[in-house]
Length: 245
Image 1 (cartoon, helix red, strand yellow):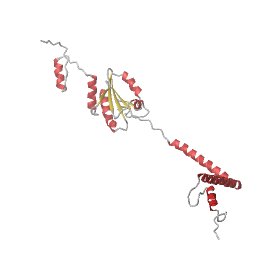
Image 2: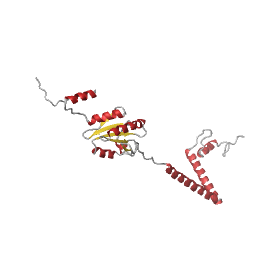
Image 3: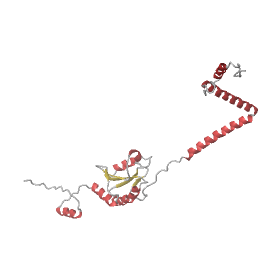
């Protein structure tokens, strides 16, 4: 007596294989899953989930109301948190004066480069001290600049400019790779960059040489007196015509 292998009896093995293939499972033991069958299965599960949720909402409407209320509360909390995060952002504090109010140096601590151009037109000699308030070299040179300014304030205008504040015109228009930077302007020429030691003595000598590049010596006695006080190379221009033989 033969075994029963399917619905069609003992001779229905081919029909059973085709039935399994049509159902999306493929032949036995092959491990093949039809994409159409998988999609249909996912769609069926989704529809059953919707029917279950709809049935639950009809039976217990308080659950649906609670879910809606919980969602609204979460949205409100998220919006409130975002608005609070915006309030935490604090704008940068404006810069403060780098030199004291009693200093002979005009301190443009907000980087007012337009003011610099204005005072330059009204002064014979102007020394510009570009600084960054956080820079250790700028802080160390501050006292030296004040000392030189106190000695030359009647002849030279000393101006300090904060060239680091990002909202100042100096930061936007000038691009320095180091600080401090000293530029000296004469009414007829400039700028001349000072690259010597940040010492009041050397800065003062530099300014005086630019102020008076030529010195007129009317007599021989004054010339000898000048040479005895200055041990520097001197270029003499005589006003007396020479006779060439």
